[in-house]
Length: 616
Image (cartoon, rainbow, N blue to C red; front, side, top):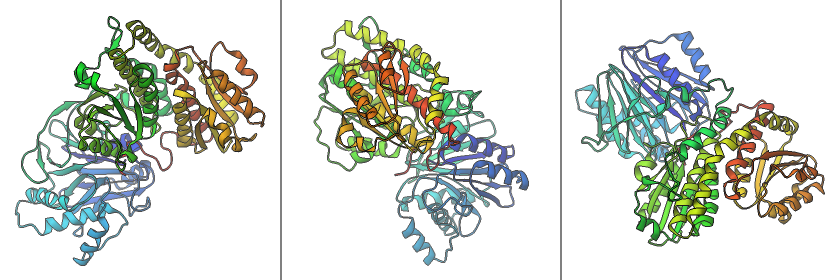
């Protein structure tokens, strides 16, 4: 949540900062601001609302400066106002800070600083951080302004409880930007005579492909000609230069009206990328060398815990069905934010797998660290190979989905499910699954991308259904077995971007209370592919229709009888029931998208939400 970009070089900073903020707006869009150093002082411009408001202000003011930091905010402490927007200054007005994360002890620090004569103009925890660093700077005996600023950051941060990714500038040290991270990502972009600091490489990919991903407790100083990374407690830190593996075009909408729609349509390719090079038809199994586990270690796993949040948690729930059905290994899904605070029973051969698109989700990272604290083997399923989760796990699987900008996750879900299928296949073949069954699953999995394309070809039909129901205030989503998580995911998508209240349920739970909600004004979406519980789903649909509830059904082609009980039907191609979530979720993504568009919602920037949740 929230986005940071800083620039130091030979060019005017404000256009670069604005372009970077535009690319980061999916991380927060309550307010935005920038601070520029022009050699004579700091010029700060802040505006509540979308980045467009800041762009207009910058166009009017025309600030100058070749050094600057900027921020787009998702509000935590304090309402989204001009006063609460970043950057924030210290007591002297010479230092400015932008900050991602949460300072948990900010109130105690604020009270102490007030006692030292400081005054505050905002409700934010970030302003307290700016004052704290400024206090240390002003009290330092160091004569060199750059070393004084670095030292102030290193002295102030150990007093902070919480998470941070920060960029700091000071008018006395106009030739540097200082950054630091703990629990909130920060990356250095390397250029010729210029350098960048950002919370996400998407902000700087148009300028450089060479980056340094900072680790927790790193403090970096960047200038026009170089960079230096130290530990917050002093001493040089370990540095690795990485190459960004996606292009500028991949982080743009292209001809699509929204990132979400673009990413829905990218799913045939993203699933191909997720499974490419990972299937062995000779042995009827999956090849997952990134797990960093021997065959013996894999064979000893007697229990698997999957931890994730939101959409990734739903992918994990599908994975639970896949692993248990293919490999017969007891598997359970723990919501990451709960796992940290529970005493979950484990064995020495329990395997913990954490799932996160960004690899930076704070709750999932906390679950990972709790599992490692208990001595569990930990793997990660992420979309960012340089993320914190990727670095802290013992091994894992990179989903290769490419940048996902839309706040409502789509292609990451199907890529995660595809990877969970590979995992289930691998464990299945180690245990009881025959090579014939393994090869059959491989053939069916390789056919999924083309089948998704067939569903996407029905977009106009799905759009018509969406427009028919766009006025409703609520929806029910029903599914059974491995399509129950898809019902949860469909309901989440509808809530996220259309603001329609929606809830997902196992179809059989209808009669245990949910049916009380059924009425003509409340449509029910049934995920009813032709599987072992198809007839049971039909009975549940009949129960809804008997009470005059409208029904939208997602069904397998070749079963037109469902049209006799459902008001509207969206067909998916035939596939094995184990793989059906990869297909049944596509109509639900499109349905929520077109409902949101029909209601005039801002699809890529839904209210109160942001991508990559890095605060608790």
